[in-house]
Image (cartoon, rainbow, N blue to C red; front, side, top):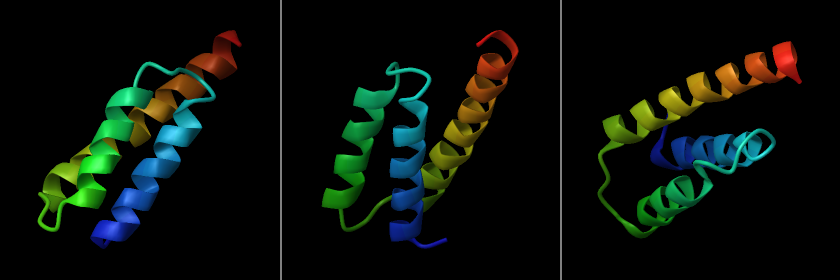
Length: 68
């Protein structure tokens, strides 16, 4: 994935997480602003964040399905 594709995925994850929690919204928004402003970013760090928040979203969906 390219930088822009990863940023778009990260934005989508942030927005989808809002359905379950606002806990990570500010931090993710701050990260997104930084990624958009910087020319050089650590692409591996961004990939890891996207991966981590995908897992987190999956967990929230499972919890919501079980207890919601």
